[in-house]
Figure 1: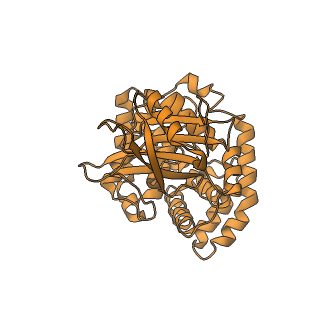
Figure 2: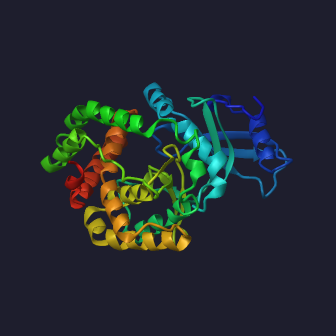
Figure 3: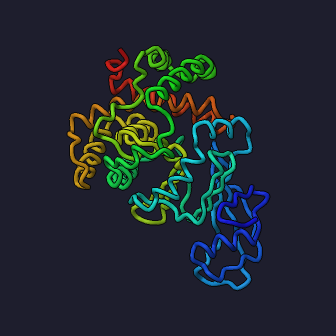
Length: 362
């Protein structure tokens, strides 16, 4: 299989195709003589593998391993990914936006998608010895601060970028109609979600989920107004690669399948609300958000005052409730996935309660 638009399945990947990709990426004489692959990661929408490569004429600069992303093997998950354009958004990030931002991401050797999928493939730099973060285990406040401040490298360069706001590949539906559809879906699947997790959520947490469903405005994101930029929308430890052999740890961001244009505090609130233990989040979040706000202003993102920033952070805590419900109902269930969903549901609901979001629910 060859050509600029080649989209092989994992089973169709060949040494010849890998050689073509590496040559196009700058390794002009690379000839892959053989390879094998091994599964890595815990992705929900896709299958991730590490290709271990051998070369006919080895050179030190040739990558010994690269990472491949392919569609999920589960038909229901693939269908959901296509409907939300997860595959085409991630390919769009690597092909169109990665070079414009300053947040750390792997080098992309190849990214292609047919329409909006499910046929897609991405080949990325292997960030070994970095390891995938663990949202269930959470992280300490020091690392949470570092990860939060890293968002300035995404939000700052794309602050009020009108070309992103008008990009069809990134904005594929009327915002009002999309909000209505998301609200209707949330209302439709919430009863099953609450029944599935009835023994894992406190009464006040379950009540908050229901109040969000019943709210006419369904306020899961802060009003954007003039405060918009590219946002990751799934910024959490499971989508970060952490190299703890370095001090401070090197953080690389992956899984750009939910990329969107929105309010920057959506990413900040979603991360802090879901990736810290509750007591540690309560004692450190305002300080971390203030540091993020200062860093964003220092980057040049004018026009976002502290009061607006903090209110947006509070409002955005409701985004985690919607995300956890959608994630639980749209992908293949696994033991770790069920534990992750329960953990996220408890943390995000507690966060939203702590932020007194009742005032936004009408």
